[in-house]
Image (cartoon, rainbow, N blue to C red; front, side):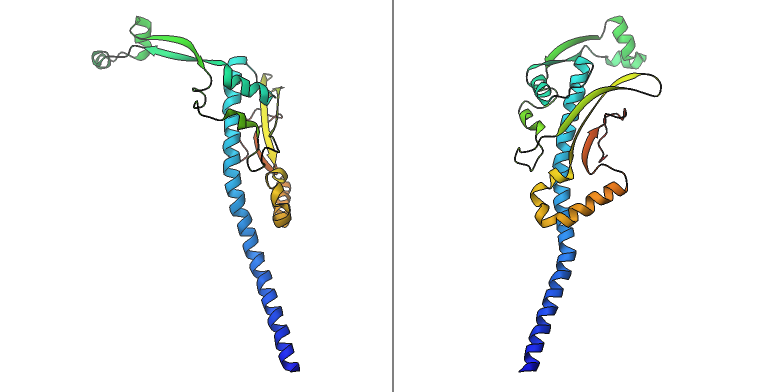
Length: 214
């Protein structure tokens, strides 16, 4: 009887250790799968913000720190596009006439016109009102966004912007289940002196509005 009890206890210990071993392997793997999926959707949202901001700057010469302003611009404002009227004929091409020569001779006319921002920057069905919200947060969190001007090393003042979200917000709903994995992820970013989250642009340097995932 005593021997049987010991065997049952040992079997329980083995099962427990096996489970812990399984968890130590599978939990980090599951976190990486979730991270990849969330990062893909959030980076696309940040790319959309960048597209909108760059269009805004083309019109106003600066970026905006306000999502209200940015969304209003896409919904109701217009942008300038160059329309080309005419084209090079086969004879022109055989003669080696360039497009620049054709424009000079009036065979091709370039005309700048205004068109609606929505439908040209984004498709008409694009849900621009969602652009401010961080995916997977049920509209509880917005991206942090700011803009300013900085001086480059060559003495030129340039407008810049940034938009970002931290990992703590991205995985807020998963902290209880994946807290250790999240702390490891952030710790590794800090060790490498990198931003623990996703960000596009910078308020400290003119970086052509690259994202930290690129």
